[in-house]
Image (cartoon, rainbow, N blue to C red; front, top):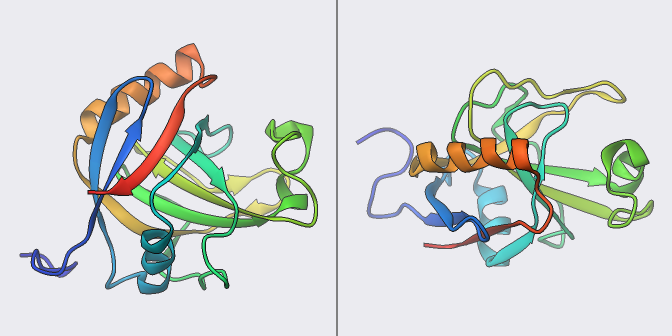
Length: 171
């Protein structure tokens, strides 16, 4: 058993690309990001339009309104996520509300936007040309199905994300 969380207390969720009918299972990292894990867990199920990263490389994500009364602190942060990492980002709408990001309809100044992301391959760097380093909270790790999900994410990159939904639910 590793130091993460033993199997008697571990919490799991299913992440899926709905249209492509691809799923993977992740374990919440309650011992490393307890506040973030609670915020996400209590908000499940969640689903939204999927996006493929422009800057971070091998990442898919969906955007949501705030999940809790207060945003989690930057616990278990990274700027170099590895394959299978689930990351939580919180942005002021003004940070993403430009046409360069493609959210000009969904994101507005004066709002808070939560970005739940899955990283499916290596060599990711959370460096944004507009704002610099963008640390994320690693709150989960895929434990099953990452190979199938990575294949679907590569297809999403090549053929487009329009009409696809990223879903998170308790497993």
